[in-house]
Each structure stands twice: as C-alpha cells, then as structure tokens.
Amino acid sequence: MLDVIYDAMVKYYILFVSHLIYACNFQSKTDSELERRFDPELISHLVNRNMEFFDNVVFYPNSEFSNKSFHHLGAYAIHTYKATESEILSIKKEFNLTEKLSVTHSESNCIRCPNEFDCAKAEFTTPPFKYLLDKLSLDSDFLPDEFKIFYLESKQGKYLPTSSLVMDRCEGTEWNSGYTKGLVISESSGLVTFWVTAW
Image (cartoon, rainbow, N blue to C red; front, side, top):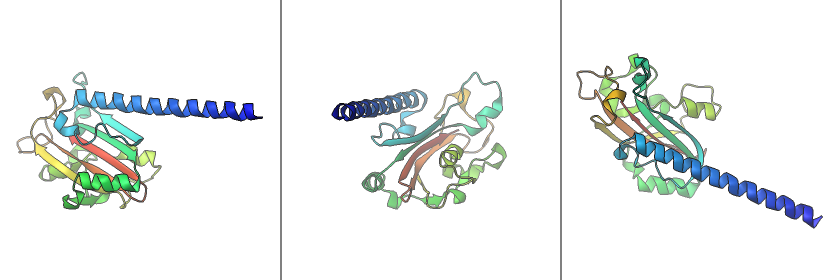
C-alpha cells in the first residue's frame, strides 16, 4: 500500500515539476519573442514577470501580409497573470497607480474597427481584450467594471517597422503613429494584465 502511495506521489511531483518547467519555458520564449518584435520602451513593464501565468495574446502584423486590413489594429501584446493580494499591492506601488488615470473597459476608447478609431483620443487607446473575455467565458463586449484599466504611458512616434505601421489611421495628425501601454487589474478576480498597443 505504501508503495502505491509513494508511486502516486512521485508521479504527481514529476507532473508538477514538468508543468512548472513548461510554464517557465513558455514565458521565457514569449518574452524573447516580444523583445525581438517590440521596442524595449514599449514592453519594459510586461516582460520578466515572476507570476502565475493565466493567458497571453500577441498580434504583430508581418510585412508579407498583402491585405492592408490586417494593419488596422497595429501591434499589441496582452499578458495576464494570476496575482495574490500582496502581488497586486506590490504592482500598484511599483507603478504608482494611485497617480495614474483609471477607467473601466466600457469607458475606454476601445479599438473595435478602424472607422471607430478616434485620433483625438489616441493617447487613451487600449488593445482589443476579446481573447481575455473569451478566456473568462464572458458573453460581453466589455470586461466587468471591477477590471480597472490604468494608462501608464502614451507617446507619439514610430515604434514599429514602417512595413507594420498603420499608414492610414490618423494620417495628417500628430497621432498618426504612437503607442500606449498600461495595466488592467481585477482585485476580486486576482488577475493582472499588462498590455501595450502600437500603430
């Protein structure tokens, strides 16, 4: 009987360690890909996070895309982690979130389609959080109001290769190209999302 219990414990331990190694390797690979694709200034807040992985989405248009419609969303990265109460407090302190603009998803200037992009509000642009909504099994266009969006930084300028820029989004305006980055925090769900979007 003890042999059976011991064997079960060994198998569980091997499975746990394998999962941990996979998660670490996956995160390392994802971070490497981000560092290859994005300007370091854009992703400094979201790489090398030592937290429990929940979900991630990266969209980066390649120059070989012939259909220009792919470029309307620009590029974005969204990393979501499970976080303890102390980790959330630490993140709030790290980024001084009490001083940052905070809105709900429904209040934000979300990108839904190219025609709805408001150049005057480009500095408050967020990436599409549809995949996170799907991951949370939420049948809604918006994250619940408990998910607070924080804007860390917005800058004008070209932060993507010319072949990946959205050339016709805000043509003729100072926000023709740029980026925004920030966080989404849900304390009740214990989730922290680090995001960046560039166009």
